[in-house]
Image (cartoon, rainbow, N blue to C red; front, side):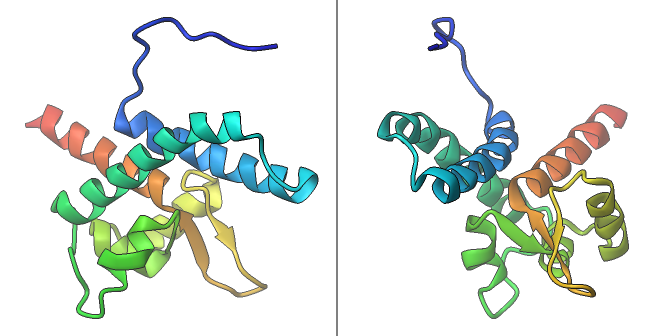
Length: 143
């Protein structure tokens, strides 16, 4: 069954970041289960993913939410463009404490996953960017 969206339906960059977190997991599952995804599906997902990457870059690096570069290039370079961030990278980029980010990850709010028994958290970059944008919006409303 195909779903036809209404003409003129637009997704915000924040919507794309939230959707991207789900779509990337679904495509990875499809890859493992079926060996890949249909080209028609990839064509629908690609612009959403591009918008999500741009949103992460603009919100976490260019948006003045923290640090644009940590000196080594790891924050401004590959980490922000990828879907995953360590708690330390997210804290540097957002100015939010590592303990609060871990608490949000434990609650499932940041799409976090732990590696190993005492491993660190890996957070979804799009969800971290959405958190920053939401906090910025709330601060703007309070002012």
